[in-house]
Image 1 (cartoon, rainbow, N blue to C red):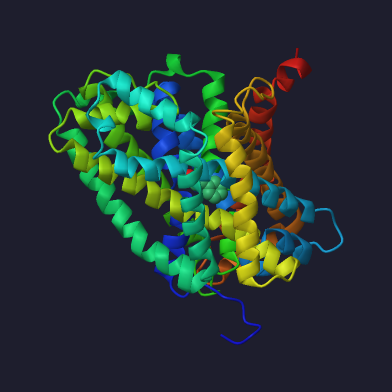
Image 2 (image 1 turned 90 degrees about the horizontal axis):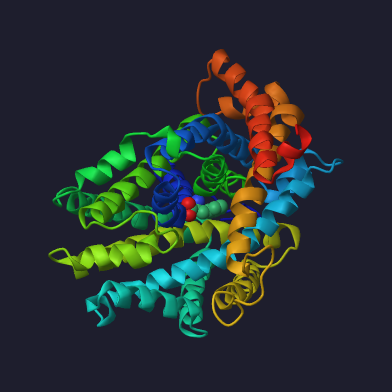
Length: 453
Ligand code: PHE
């Protein structure tokens, strides 16, 4: 690579592996099953799928278009495409969101690493009360989770420092196929348990009476979180994509991969939970409390338990890499730092905030904001506020600022494009996506009720 050439992805599979690696993460395996459990099962999934197709997919394509057209980081891309306007602040917003998300993300990923070893420990042999106690004391402990979080953050930094092709692309190309195999093994295990069908029924037979408006808001936020949208991750990755790649196809493949893995994760978890007479509505502790109980009661459970947490850690790693890359790309291109320095700085800063997040579940749990501790606050603000708003602005930017002609020119490189597709896409990014996000969002924070009485 010459001194000034930008690092980039080298193959189509590499692009998909990296982008799907970003999308498929804790969101799919930790959050999706538990929010589905909390908000009513199949009905929630249907709303979520609607958001994914009508809002998520067009915004993903928008991010790819912005990134590949500008060949810049999340902030620099807006600055390049709209030099004299305020659009660049959308990028600043995204980089801020990256800090917040990565800090609590690293904490959960740290628990996941801890649980790989848990499968073969005494704690795993305990009663369900003991397993639950194990989790709550781990989370509250002032040092142990911090240690694992830092291990995870170092791993993330190591991959990112190697660069886009050598680090991110190569690691994703190896890890994503392993992830698929692991999840399929766990699916077969769950589906062959006696009593698994009740869980399948919960996942696939909608009961809309169980769906609340909160559920709709969470489904929207989760669509953004799960597809890594709204903060410039896919702008950054898009900026490393070759002009020969077909962006529409890539966006569809990544969205499908993310959705399929979320459903497969649901199938690996929920039927097993039902088979052992447990409840799927445990919330964030579902995979750390309920699931170990499930594994404990099945033959070969310790091995499956370990496989599950390896799967979770891999998923978290390829996503965390993409979040860190948003910050590192910004630091190297805008602040002109060397990649090494930028990576160390970004890793240290996000880890520090992460330590506060971890401690907010234990010794700092007395500090709350709107009744939420720092950990829950960051999760709530980023998924339900920053990402949807960021996504809305990205859609508006592509729909109104770039406009039809420029969008067409960018999308048409690397693929043929039907006129009707473009019309539909422009309608979605100009009107449908921003308006629906606004409605759900205003309703979510209670403003809509105030406005319309
Ligand atoms: N998509 C990731 C997940 O599902 C999380 C993520 C959010 C990654 C935002 C990048 C940007 O876990």
